[in-house]
Amino acid sequence: MPRQTKIELLIRREADEGFEVRAVPSSLAYLQYRPQRIADSAWELAELPKGIDRRRTYVLKNRATDRYILLRERERFLWAQMDGRTSLQDMATAYVLRYGAFDFDLIPNLIAKLRQAELLTLRPASRLREALARHQKNLGARALEVAFKGLEKITVTSRNVQRNFERLYRWGGLLIFTLPTLVLGLALAVLGAMSAIRLWQDAGEIAGPLAQHPILAVLSVKFFFFATLAAHQTVHGLACVHYGRRVREYGFTLLHGFVPTFYVDVTDIFMASRRARVVTALAGPLVHLYFGALCLWTATHLPFGFLQSFVVATGVLQWQSLLVCLYPFCFLEMDGYHILVDVLGLPTLNKDSWRFFRDELWRRLGEGKGISRQEAIWVGYIVLSFVSVSAFVLFNLWGLTHMGSS
Image 1 (tube, rainbow, N blue to C red):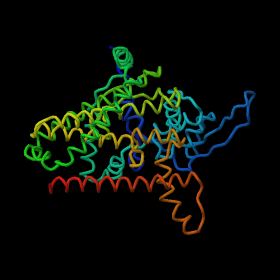
Image 2 (image 1 turned 180 degrees about the vertical axis):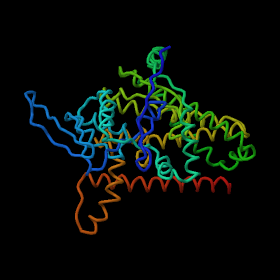
Image 3 (image 1 turned 30 degrees about the horizontal axis):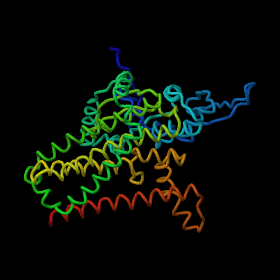
């Protein structure tokens, strides 16, 4: 078995106290890091005269160290994205939408070059981790940071999975992407919705057995949820194979150090068409749609008791997961969000929306100035996300109240 490639990042410590080398256990964690160039006053960029090939070339200078590096036009585009708020994954998406293709060695090589010239640092993707890094003098913050670093090492991953996915695709995975499967799936979804309406009338009584065995209920529901989460990621990988692209990695990790999740690296799908990217993003969440519908339909044929309560709770959790995965207006960069930014051609929608909403909108309104179409999309994204999250929370509170009073 080939030895796994180890990804190592050079991370600047707090208060410019030097650097530390941090090993990243998976490509998923790597893609979530956010490169941040040094302060604007500390660097200078100049365009060189065009050569015979008419390509644009730039010289980037570190004013503090007087170090110079050459950048091609596409490297300069990536340099402009390195503002500390854009993740490597978002940068790759922006690159594909701008140039129509992607070289997977480009970003790592550029980061290495910028790092050697002391022009770049990398920030953690988690806001919590970033806050902890700013308070290293606090004993509690240091303890949590040590704990998160330890948890980050709990990663089971394989970067040699392409053959397994190809074999699984040949053994039946290809049927997922056929019209009969889609029709049967939609019919099952309708059946599940009708079953949910019937079950809702007795929601309080059905939920009762779960309250009598809370620990068993939570453990069993979560176990089946994680099983379907693994299936969700597997279907993403099968979709990647369906379009002739390569699955780069598959595994289990603790995202940001504390959120357990399965993941699959299908970034090679960027080399395919927009349709392929949308189908790949959509395929995974359909696991929750179909499995949730099956659970709800099955529950209508079960006698009252713990088993029926468990199956109903599992079905509801699956459909909530479907909503979270596919609904783009909830501040989470899930599958639905990636579909939206691909359609709009705005790969950094979340970041740009927050920046404009926080720094520009209120000043514009105070000055009586209008906003452009793109700025209107940014505002719409923030407003719809805020309303949607609020409605989701209120609906769940109402549902709990309804079951408790039934």
